[in-house]
Length: 211
Ligand code: 3PG
Image 1 (cartoon, rainbow, N blue to C red):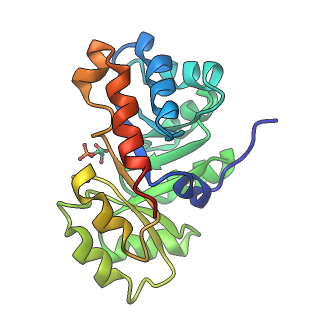
Image 2 (cartoon, rainbow, N blue to C red; image 1 turned 60 degrees about the vertical axis):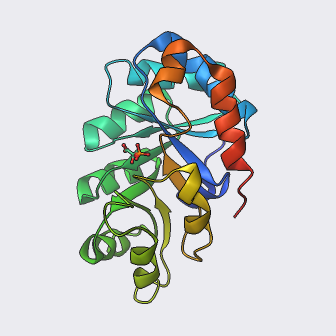
């Protein structure tokens, strides 16, 4: 039986969840191994390319040390396809009741995206208290999270969008931030060249920034 994770456990595993875009199935397994070697094992593979689901399936099958999830889950069909491929958590760029319900029905931990107070209230009303703040830098960055810590004192965030190794510490220092998300650990050129050592280095540099 595969171990189940809650959204909070997904967020607490490492200081970062990499946001991964894969264009080639052959890259999936070595890239996942490179991230795990750097201490990052919760991997968000975005459903943005035709190969994404096959990549999730390959990682789930061949890299048991990793916990693969699906990103860019925007509707029930995405959630179902992600679960069928072996995704163990889902990340969505926004929140709808349909996505929330689909993930609940599938037993898939969901980290829903929010950028406004109303969206937080809606997600919270439907049982989600661990949320992705997206797009974080474009929507107000750390200052926005500080403002939200008053009214939304019981919500915890994973800021994503414009986050980098340079500003991760500033986010992690906030009490309502559990981890950050971002694509900088998995640069497209490093993936294309198969520079797995670079990806391991970027992952371990970030994993060292403990909360
Ligand atoms: C995304 O969904 O594209 C992520 O938020 C990644 O943002 P980043 O490329 O700014 O890290």
